Length: 475
Ligand code: HEM
Ligand code: HEM
Ligand SMILES: [Fe+2]
Image (spheres, rainbow, N blue to C red):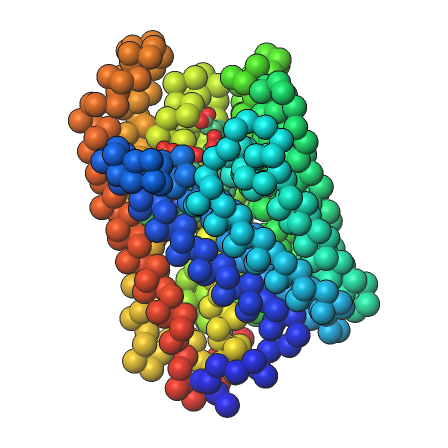
């Protein structure tokens, strides 16, 4: 029945996808809660001292982010799998098992983070408590579990396309998944030399977010434009190929912008500066392409909230990664901005703008189908304000935080680095400057705006389309 949440409206892959989406939403909420605590600790440094220290709140904040985005991506692929391949998902039982494995592993890891927190610097800690690499701190046993789940996921996707039909989108997707899983392995071996360790660690972090994740969302975007606007497959696929070529062409050696100051050879200064400065090019192409497509179809879309979030993604990716990344990517500038709140400003706008947005778009696509393919275009019965306010509060909140952090980062680069010459004393002079303190306060104000946005988003996802009895707009 239209407007009623019912698993019978979903195919096998989609049933699994909504499980992933549910866990993703819970972790998104956890991310924001821990972000709020971490942000408060800048203003009240003794908040939860010795109970939940900043290093723990920060770690939970960013780990929850990485995991909810990954689960969102996996869900998105299970979501489009049968539709794109034209056959039922292969090996779904195994896929379900992997979901429960992954979810239990994540739960155990988070509990250990919260209750054990730290251990001595030995093998036991590395295997069972915390591996100590930012963003991928999960202990070694969980690493291995994640690899196993990723292999099952890969098998589900690849085997389904092999049994059904291939398309340009699915071809790019499968090759990208090989790269994504392969690169994760680079973060899994241990060395005692911190330069060598960081060298490989960046393979995971940079090559994920600036290469394989970008290509992955490119595939989701291409499929989304076909579904939401009725865009022509040939056109979006051609764009996808061009974007992938540009993305890998600039993003792989763009890795060098993390090799400026970690003890790697000097040639990385020019390689990193040059190639990473080209990274915004594919992002411009993406903006042009999606805005052109939307215009060409006069914004007549089957799902307005999802379409709005796809557009938020396009601009968020362009500004957060492209513009905010470019600002500090030349070594001459990075010398002053490296590791300041400038970096955090870019990190927030890029991760939210490029990735959180597109996963939220797929949440809306899923809810529409889950309720039997209800109307989600203009004139939603009674409930239309919620998605718009959630969209506005979340984007406005993150943008506000980004600006507050940028001002704090500018002050740090100027006072701590340029005037005080990067001294220990300079660090503290910069920390007590009014521009820094006000930046930290405004970050909290906009953090609360972001938090209100997520409350509304969750409420909306639970209620949108309820009782709606019109079928979705045909495109
Ligand atoms: C969606 C894509 C992107 C995401 C999610 C992202 C995210 C991040 C994050 C979280 C950091 C901080 C890493 C740390 O903990 O040290 C970072 C650093 C950096 N990003 Fe990006 N980024 C993206 C794309 C780009 C692009 C396209 C450029 C260049 C045009 C860029 C340039 C940089 C630079 C130069 C740094 C180092 C900052 C420093 O020295 O402290 N990023 N990025
Ligand atoms: C209530 C909203 C939020 C607050 C108050 C908040 C606060 C914080 C704080 C205090 C840090 C540590 C920064 C530092 O070490 O100096 C942080 C790091 C980070 N947050 Fe958030 N955050 C929020 C929402 C988000 C969202 C929505 C995203 C992305 C989807 C995000 C992504 C990140 C990333 C990638 C880092 C690491 C940045 C880096 O290493 O430079 N945060 N956040
Ligand atoms: Fe990078």
